[in-house]
Image 1: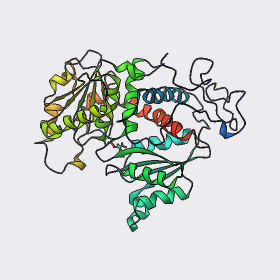
Image 2: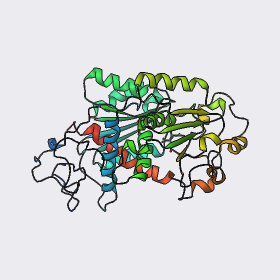
Image 3: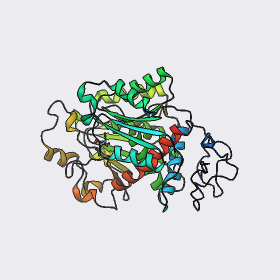
Image 4: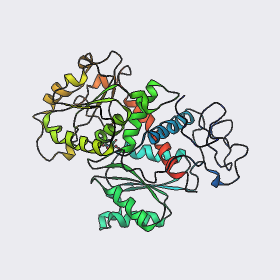
Length: 382
Ligand code: ASP
Ligand code: ASP
């Protein structure tokens, strides 16, 4: 078993995290979600836990305890999701608003499903069909959702910093609303970073995923690192775990300045002094003996110049194929956050090969991890 990360008295009979849900919606025979006999008969009986973070905007300052709390909570929800009755009443009466100022398929659907599985009411906003087309500002849009009683705002925007700005405004207003960054520009995508972490850790120990499981593992992150918010979030969590992180891309997509940015942040954060981050402008040294390979989409919508000679050349040099994987450890696994440019960053056959590809399990993990995040932010609110 991993570290015990919950407050007192919250481990269930089988040693699993046991949530004391409101008894309003009895869900037996599921032991994890049935109310404890002593649970008070009101939604106020939500568990208090060790979670203190009010917004989730970035992984740069996440602590080991926070990572482990998310991983263990997500494991409990993963178990709930494998049952016939997949819905729990945890966030009943709360409103989760998905404010997607930039388009998305999987992140938005995944947050929506996660909120619904927790019995929250969901509001979905898409910029293209909203009053923003009539000139409404971002903060006014957020305040409109606030006035409708929103408790948690899940925010995506193509500009870095928008979720932070909305969070600052909510704090200024003192309304207790939590903001969850669902991807801001080239900055961060924390829920993706956490679901990737969960996917890797549960592969190693499904019963007790925890950060330390990745210590010493070699993880290659390959592709459009410059434009990738996923890479930035992943770098923070993987370095915090003690993994060796090898970035590989053509120099136009992995400028030397990037290393400075990371080391400065690492200096500030005071993580392990051991060098754990390596930059490569060729693929092979990154793949050599790697345990995991994370591929990234070429973010053509964010490229302001012609940074690549051709997609075919990119695939030849940096595209992940079965042949190139022979450089890695024999049971290497490949990840991709989606959406995939088939045949560009990863070969089509590899993408669909369950022996190597974790892509589908990333999507599945996404719901459990987002349930965990909404639960951790929302459990103090009712
Ligand atoms: N980048 C998108 C997201 O995170 C991927 C998609 O649209 O499916 O949601
Ligand atoms: N879905 C991820 C994102 O929103 C990755 C991608 O779009 O390529 O950043």
